[in-house]
Length: 210
Image (tube, rainbow, N blue to C red; front, side, top):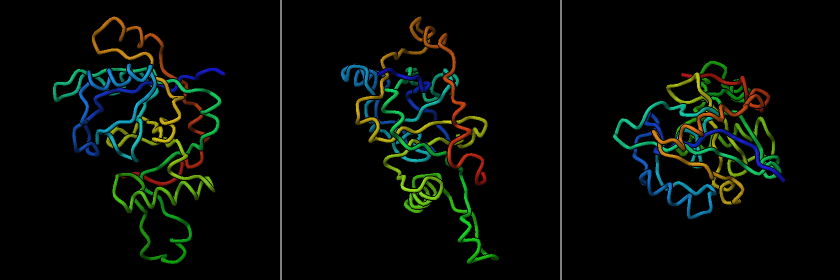
């Protein structure tokens, strides 16, 4: 078995229109939690960055969110790897912001509007589950890794590892370093992870965006 690189996890998370509450963990506390877990990913107890659901948000590029948090917290960067055999077991779907289901358009030709798939509202979650099952029959929110554009930064793509994947103990954040340190610079030299597979995922190229 071997691990594959998925990109970078950054904490504290970036603040955007979908990050309305601060992460409840400080940078140091989260780093210590990861260390105590032998470098394996831990469940986040914060509310930050929950654009498309709870879990671990990742980017394929180093320091994709730019400089340190505007609130004054110093960010940490972690290299995210996952056991390749475990990775292959999980469904993967690309999630647009808005989507009109054909059966809805057929029933309400004049009044049908695209449904919201992002955000944390109960209706959004219901729409998300419906879309996942539409493009990947049998898949659910719990057993699917989601990829999407980043709200307010539509040129960027993010991945969301669901809590159940974190619980497997097969997601590793063994290399974590505070911004401005030599160890952090070494992470940057690894370059971006290859996410070319994203364009072939169910859901890619579908839907619309505000």
